[in-house]
Image (tube, rainbow, N blue to C red):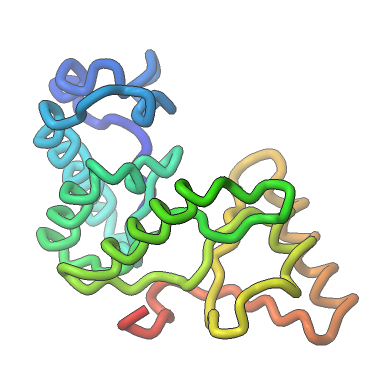
Length: 193
């Protein structure tokens, strides 16, 4: 489940500054000061979104968010509260695999590592070992840590570029027999990681 659109207009006022005119989460959450005053509103919104999806009979395999807002450290307690409330103990980590050209500085890499470690505990949360975008994965998959068992590749199947992204993965698989991309659900991940 990707937290994306504000569902209830009554919550929109409480989330002012975090949503755009269409009622979708804007990319401003990281530049905003303290989020403390809106944490209950964010939790109510995310819970409403999970409830909406469940009302359609969809099984929620994991939690993530548009613009990766769930990886903002001050929102981690909200994500954990939603996990406990709905029993969804799988989630997307913060991006942790980059090409040499994209690699962030040491401080940001350490922050992401701490966030990912915190995400995986209290309550225990199953995640992939790595998370990156398609271009980075295809160009640098040989540099993946050997201990990693799973990597989530960020794709946009419903977007304009979606069909091309899937074709590029199939082409890479066909060209290189050692390339073993396997599409799985978060539900297939082994608990404990």
